[in-house]
Image (cartoon, rainbow, N blue to C red; front, side, top):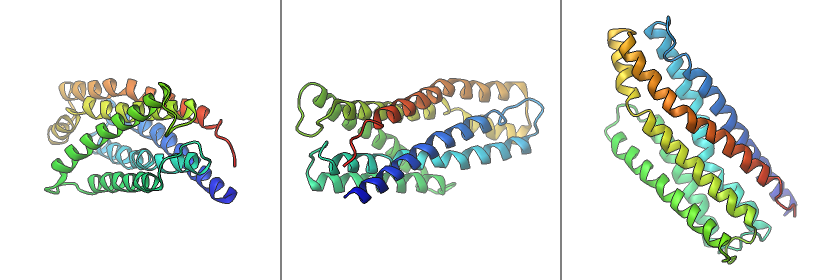
Length: 224
């Protein structure tokens, strides 16, 4: 029991580290994507680095609920049915599969549909986390015994929402970047690219804050 808990705790910490670290790397690389004086080829290289590094946070977001809820389940802090625990891991693996399929699905016919499914799926994750967390905070302790676990779910829902906010902020980015590759850097296209990145930054800062808050709350998990 203790060994299993420690392994889950290690996995949870590793996922946090790669999420935050990958986010920092993505943020830093994004500054070179539209930097004045860089050629289209240099900016494309920066974009490839940014997208590659960004896979770390995407994978960690998809998986981090698994070990977190499993630890709470094993210690009796979330007395959910065993099938619900299994379902949680299956949902994480399904989420991971979508993340990888989208990343490696460039120019594939299924990509637009899968991207829409992924967006809707994340909305469902947000709603589910908020529903169970708020129910617990309002007094229903049948599934979540400790309030700090409910708050961790609320913060996680906010992190997923920030990810969707980044996606919406960057919506014009792809077309603008393709135009820049075809025509070369120019002030008009750079303005669009920089505007997208600027609108995304507040969501990035909120994700960093949310990760630190959830880590602080997670330090209060009771060891078996």
